[in-house]
Image (cartoon, rainbow, N blue to C red; front, side, top):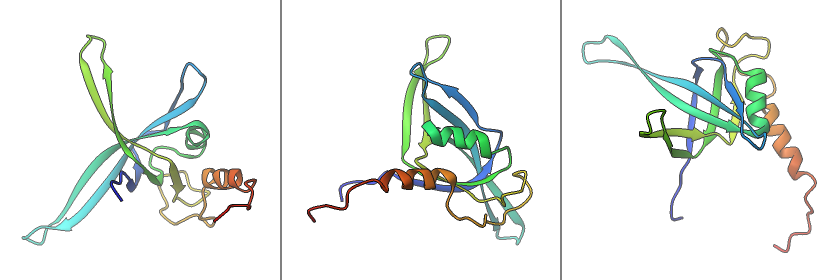
Length: 145
């Protein structure tokens, strides 16, 4: 294997997903996800370190995020890390590093509002994963290997 670019994070959303559409009417959602590490320092004091991650989803997965995820939702995202270049209003080049999530798993209980419960949902497969799996059910099994 020559290389691997894959991030896997579990964290809570800092705000509701923001969904916008490209000129070709493709949905994309941007989210900020907090992951928190807790540890005891050498004095025995409990310390917390929170990192914020920018996550982007595309297409139907973006619409599912908008429909089911809210601020405080506990969620798992998986996908490659990418850096994009863009220009701000003053014409300055800016860079954004984000996780381009290809998979998402909702980890809150189904009836929860997002912030309260961290119990896993009864159905371990997210709606997005089910829809993606359904796309492959139609494939022929006549593979030569």
